[in-house]
Image (cartoon, rainbow, N blue to C red):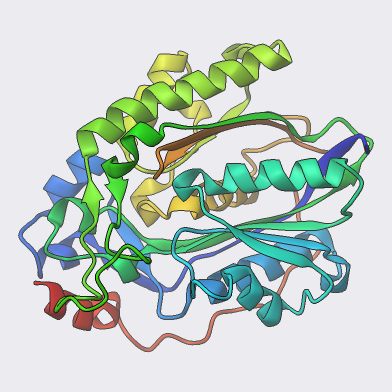
Length: 356
């Protein structure tokens, strides 16, 4: 066993096409006020490329921040619930696009809790001594699944990716402890039942996805579940919320984030919030928010950072990171997505026409 598993690199990739509330209101019966007051979302991004492209760019930026050679990556985990293909894994596509050919690769689907699950797995595998350099990526292209006749869900989601590099360290840093859980009795509160081998592939509307979303049940379980996982983590480490410098929660709904902060008696000034810019990007929300916090100087050397998430399943997760010495990238990557010559509504036009 090695000592710890430090986060040495970080990066994000959000597609350039922006979809505002007003633009959504131009095609479905809603308004900016309705969306904003219920979710805190103002705009979100829509990808013109597969999710593996987002993941690959985020990964390359994280590797540059760590000044790490992609050939040294021996573990690549992609947390996603919106895979490019069911066979092979999205991670296999990311390996090809990044050149990480010496890595063991796999996808991990824990919904919106996926990044914390993935970081937990990578940390354990690094600390076991079996692996030396891991890439953990949260990447989603959720807008591809949206059914625009379902107003309550269509307005909530966006696309994006975030990544971190994890390496062995003797310094007390990285993910010190995490706790994961799931409430499978409520699995149908958030699901896409017509995607996968249980779907009717001969149905007339095959390819139009009926997202099942019980917002009230999810809200209730999300706050309680994240708070419970957080309590377990803090108690294990002998800490209280007063010892936490920053909280990076999953960005699903501003009211859920505020309720969690209130439950934990933490001022919102210590909580990362970017849902207004991106909506819910599922497994990508935490690594994107972490990257932006570092870019803005809100994470300092030695900070204790609490991660909290919940997602489809209904999964839940929390973890405590002790940040290492370095908070600035060693290098910058020139990796970019292919150019996008369409607006967000133009990218979505066929899906909107087909589902409305």
